[in-house]
Amino acid sequence: MAKNWYPMINEESCVECGSCVEKCTHGVYDKSSQKPIVIYTDGCVDGCHGCGNLCPADAIQYYGDTNI
Image 1 (tube, rainbow, N blue to C red):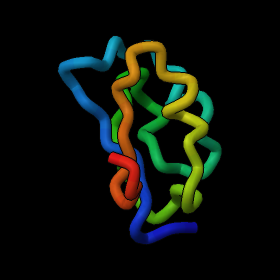
Image 2: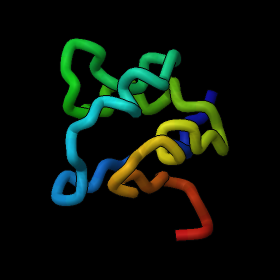
Image 3: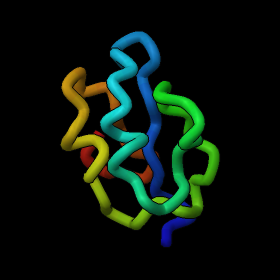
């Protein structure tokens, strides 16, 4: 797991579809809400773009990504 890699949600772009929340099995998001709320940054897998690849609004960037 990563300490310097985690998703950051652009709340203005997010359409609250819940795809990212459903995708992540590492406890990064609050599962009690469809709205993506990052609650456990250390749970994110270093270099994983799984939730970002599913986002229809392209509202997810990653802290620690050198490509942004």
